[in-house]
Image (cartoon, rainbow, N blue to C red):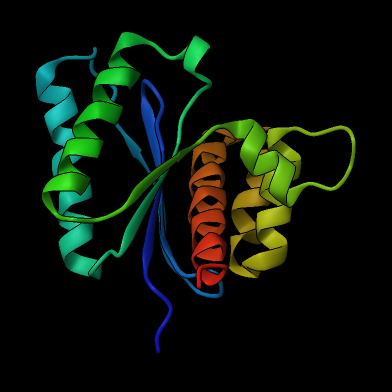
Length: 164
């Protein structure tokens, strides 16, 4: 039986990280920019782009990395609700993780941060090294969103392997 293909999404106000794959294979990764102010139109654009990926890759589950509930903006909450409705309409399970859940699973040191999470993802998917180098040099920090999406995708993929 093939591993299910999972879509990882890291929501932000201007950037959305995307990762598609299984716990062993990364099929797609990207950072999509949505620079305009939040609006219904922007939220629909985000959902449409995700809907296209669902159809293209035959997505079996969606893992969303979102800010902690206390830190979420109204725009993030509305986008999460729209993604949940999209997943429900397509009968695709959706889970939401915060940064602490991802760091807790993938970083074994006491001191945790987003760069260490990115480094942990490079251990699983070496093809991400060139993006990690850009983060480490401080040049392209927006790639953190992509690494968060990869971590969410991987955590959901791993959790599926633990089901009876």
